[in-house]
Length: 372
Image 1 (tube, one colour):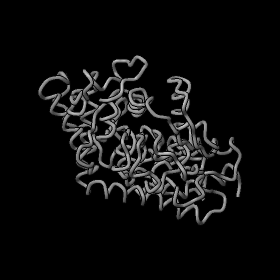
Image 2 (spheres, one colour):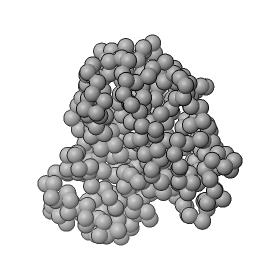
Image 3 (cartoon, rainbow, N blue to C red):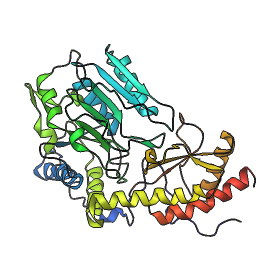
């Protein structure tokens, strides 16, 4: 039968993601609008965004947080173009974005000493015998595959190379072993549901040392430059952004950080995301026509939950369209390069009650399109 209860919030997109519960534009502090980002007020607010990020994440002493252009992609590219070159590189990938970093490193930077470890969607590559004399590039959570790293135990404490981690759909929803990560990137529009266009770049002291002791052989665009006169441009990590940011987006991000602090900080955010995954797990366990793309429970993402169905790709698309037409779930089709299926965002801004309300609609849509 057609369910009666609908999710209060049908926004399950994996980016831009759902806004926090109770979100309202009227609640944003917009005194910075129309002011220069280089004014005392502008710098103060931008610095606050960096400082509160570091505090809520519990970053180790000496780690720096900066706001950079072009979302998570811009932050990753800044790291790749500015730091890679002095050591061989090993790229780990198991979905489209990690594969994209491999392509950029080999086809754009044209580095020669590059190796890779890869796996199909739903799997994780072999993490044993990695040579940590090399620089290692990887995603923490495969947004398009629904596969996450279970922990950082595989990363050597005595590594010589850098670990460069794209963690855009993991930060604020998963435990991150910061001491094992030298470069971490993320974007506002993921776990905290902020607006797009800006990336966050976190650097360890080892990453700073690389920037101050290595000069790439290739030209660097202005928006990639993090040093001046051989020293780190500390201003980037105090709110003095390279280019003009959207102060409205900054206000939106600060609103998300304030909400996070109000609910109990990082532990509460992780708990909310895991509860959302549990609501889907309970449903999958009771229905034999729907499956996690990640078969190993330890590897299942608690943010970008990817599901496969006993249905044709066309039938899956019809299901997604039917759910959208019913205003039950928006934007839950699998990523274009991933196996046909559904992808339900379960980050911290999503309510578990909404995920639970969605599940009977999946069953209804499946029976409508595929049959009992």
